[in-house]
Each structure stands twice: as structure tokens, then as C-alpha cells.
Amino acid sequence: MNDTTVERGLNAREKLDKYLALLGPMAMIAALLLLMLMLEPARYFRVSNFDIILKDAALYMPMAMAMTLVITTRGIDLSIGSVAALTAIIMGYMVKSYGFPWWVAVSMAISLGALCGLINGLIITKLRVPDLIGTLAMDLAYRGFALVLAKGVVLSRFPEEIVAIGRGSIPGFLPIPVVIGLVTIVAGYIIYTRTRLGRYAIAIGSNPEAAELTGVPVNRYKVYVYVLMGAMAGLAGVMLAGKLNAIQATSAPFFNLHVIAAVVVGGTSLFGGRGSMIGSLAGVLLLAMMINALVTLRIEFFWQSVASGAVIIFSVAFYTWIQMKDRDGQGGFMAALKTPENKHLGRFLLIMAVIIGALFILGWLLAGETTAVR
Picture 1: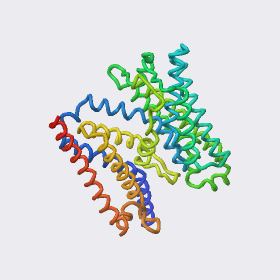
Picture 2 (picture 1 turned 90 degrees about the vertical axis):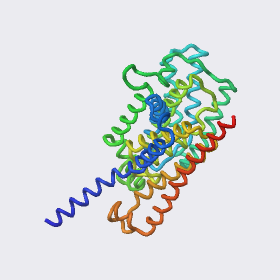
Picture 3 (picture 1 turned 120 degrees about the vertical axis):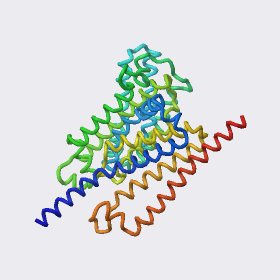
């Protein structure tokens, strides 16, 4: 009877640990909302402002879905910003210079993104180039192709259908980009939890050698996740072009940092073998809310960069902290909290949280002084 009780307790603890990945981003979201409630409640807590936040977050949802699978396999993709810009430019030329129907151009953009992902995957698996170096090199190559094709031209005034993909709305429902983003997250959740690709991604990230010994075609499935990543970057490029109704070769310069940060903040381990689609969604929403809060507080761009970097570091550190086990690997979250090293880390994270809050308030005060002088 006692053994059964202990077993039930362990099972309950394991189930609780699965949801701890959401604790980091949800705690940050709650703290951000509380801070904005004190500083700018009238401007921040408006339906129109939350509509802006959702549209901003929707742009990153497809890429976050695919990046969750990539990082779960213990990989990384630093080329997604360049892929988005390159595919959007090709789409723009197809529509504006060659008269292709919008749906053909959009399909081509997503297909070309998948092709870029295939190239990344083959470089990593066939040439044995590390993911970090391979995708960083291809980021330079794709950006170079975009610069050559664009030749400094800004492509703008796309067909209404493409603009609708980036910023349109379904009357009485959600904005179209939000629908697209949520659909990709749901599809990613199904892939991650119900398909062979998701199961193999976890196995590959946990132990590639063991996965290969059990018959998993490791290289093939790594290529698959990079193809999916490229396709979602192409879709994001289409959404960005529609949102701005313009595109240029230097667009989307920080897509990779933003998406990787959102995915890791949402609970996907950079060491592979563990991920969370719902956590990635929470991470994307957190970063969109944070950037919107900085703009709402009229904080200058330089202060935005400082605060954004600090929040990302705090979020990732907090997630790493709550996922740590005690030294012998038993006891889960509560035992981890009691270890001396985690107590010290907890104090450090508390100090970091105070510093972040001070940065928000300082930037807000300085922004107010600047406005008054003008």
C-alpha cells in the first residue's frame, strides 16, 4: 500500500514537472502586466493594443513551431531571417515584375524556404558541418542572394490578398495572421505529440547514438525538421511582406534571436530531447508583450535593446533554474529548490528581476523628460 502511494506521488510529481516549463514565461507575463498596470494602464490595457500584440506575435508563431522541433533534435538554425527576406523578395518580383498570381507567388516563397531548409539539413548531415556554423554560413549566403536580387530596391504595394495574410482580419473573429500562427502551433503540437517526426526528434535530441542504434534514421529526420523550418521561415517572410506591404533585402535581421529566445524561454532545452509547443507559444507572446510595453512607455530604441536583452537572459536563466534537479537526479522541482546552489541562483535572479524593473522605470522616466524638453 505504501509502495502504491509512493508511486502515485512520483507520477503526480512527474506530471507537475512537465508543466513547469510554462512557469517561467507565465511568471514573466504576470510581472509585466503588473508593471504596466502601475505605469501605463490606460494605454497598454486596450483592445486595440492587444490586437497589435497578437499580430506581432503571430509573425513568429510558425517559426517558433518549427524551431521547437529543430532545437529538440539538438540543432539550431540561424538562417531563418535571411530565408524570410530572400523568399519574400522572390515572391515580390514574381507578383510585381512577372505578373504571377498571388497564390502562386506565395506557394513559391514557402517552397523556396523549404528548399533552403533542405540545403541546411544536407550541409549539416552530409558534410558534417555543425548546425551553428552551417546555418550561420548559409545565413550570410542567403542574405547575399537577397541583396543581389533586390539591388537596393524596396518592393511595395502588394496585392490585397498578400496584405491580408500579414495584417487582415476575419470580421467578428481574429486577425488572419493570428489564425495562421495558431494553426501552425496546433499543427506543431500534433506533429510533436502524435507523429513519428515528433517522437524521433525527442529521441535524436536525447541521445543521437542510441536513437541510431535502435534503427532511427537520424540524418533523414534531421533534414526533415530543417525543411519544415525553412518552409515556416518562408511563410513568415510572406507574412512580414504583407504586414509592412513592403520588403527589402535587409528585412528580418533579428528573426533568429527572437525565435530562439522565445522557444528556449518557453521550455525547450538547448541541449535537446525536450520541448514544448505550448511553451513556445507563451514565449512568443511574452516577447511580443515586452516589446509592446517598451514602445508604450516611449522608451528609446537603445533602452529597448538593453531591457530586451536583460529580459531574455532572466527568462532563460529562470527556466534553467526551475528545471534543475537535485544532485542525484531525484526529487523533482521542490528538491531542486532546496539545493544550496539554487538558493544562491534564486537570489541572483531576484536581483536581476529588480534590475529589469528599474530599467523599465528609468527608461520611462527619461522618455518623459525628453518629451517635456521637446
